[in-house]
Length: 552
Image 1 (cartoon, helix red, strand yellow):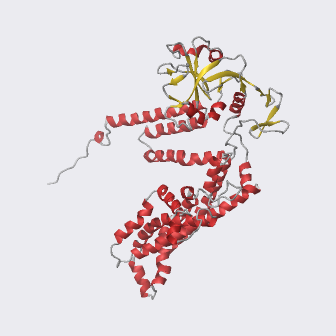
Image 2 (cartoon, rainbow, N blue to C red):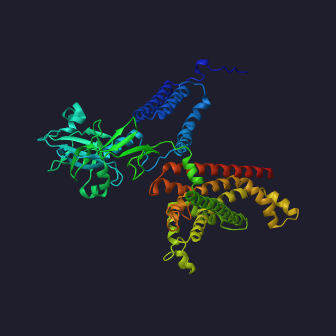
Image 3 (cartoon, rainbow, N blue to C red):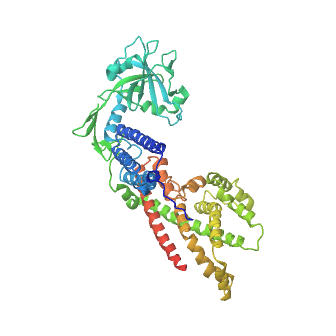
């Protein structure tokens, strides 16, 4: 007797519980709130490009996840957003920076540079009042790098004077910045002056701030470590270039600028009548004699950074020297690590060998250890006087002080670090080669060497070819190894910018952060050149590896 199976009611098919809808819309709302907060921060910072990008992402989230349609987009959108934020945006930003003079002395906008120059020219009037001052940094920040602030106090017997005039009606913040003793409190940074809430503030006997919530007050020794920055810090107040500056270790004053700016003529004039005109991101003396004014601004310089790389004789020579080593290092590293890894893989692929699992585990250990440890250990072993290499071999080679010795030391270190990776991938590739192919070669009369060269190697390269290209690209930018072992040295006498073992990425890092006048715009141009070179080399390498597919 047959039974009829009936379909469930249509209303029960695809029914989604209410809590799932609530959770979905809750997550959408939280995401939009988070994006709204980011957009608000970007608006306050004046970053309208970020506002546009965030708005586009918010609309995409709403459109994709508020409907049951576009199922593939629900999975692709997070990946696309992360690709945009962590791959595309850094490339675009680096490329944009490469066409500017951004770097030491050129980090501000022109308006900010004008304000900074005027603030640094502030001088105290003979009859100007002084205020209690403590130097502080944000709580939890490093003493050497934390943003400096002035915590200012106005004694109750005195009048806030110019401070109140500059802050206007909100000078006392409704009384919240007035202590029980009647002191008025202010906090000043490069951004300006604001009232400091009195709650939780502790004062010393001389009326200066000893402690304040959210700040770490520096003692005299700590403040002396940054004495130059303390003297240069000028807290802008008012619209006429007035600023608060340090007078002593515990006192500050409000002074007037001694340099004026004529916006129409784009000229700055000192109190002595000397004129400075805007040129190439700086105010330079109109007569061409003397240094430029201390603060510059970021501006577009076109292809100037790229012309420096390829046309400046002094720079071009060092760049070409580094480029040749940058080609040789990854090539020699890939060849040496691959040959050693492949030979070990062939050895341990022999079925007659016992205990292969133990040997393989031991060979992987160098690859498992962090490079931050092994790099420093190898650097110590290559020390000429006390290093293990010279002591064991009886040699007296200045490994890290001689250009060729340092290069050899890097290749040896990278061989130790890189052969386990090649050993692993070659082991896997060898085990995937069918035995009947080797048996057929043996039947045709091929010996072990002929079989290795004509059968095993082509099939092995089919599997590992793309990985060799990737390894070349990795070692082309192997910043960490160079930095830990040689730091790019040794350096030729009189040239502390170009090292004999520098890769282009280390060279760009030194230009951006470690040179006497860091130039991030020029370093970005070098990075773009590196990006293009790696792209071209990888393209050619992958084309060659694709040709190996014909072996199959």
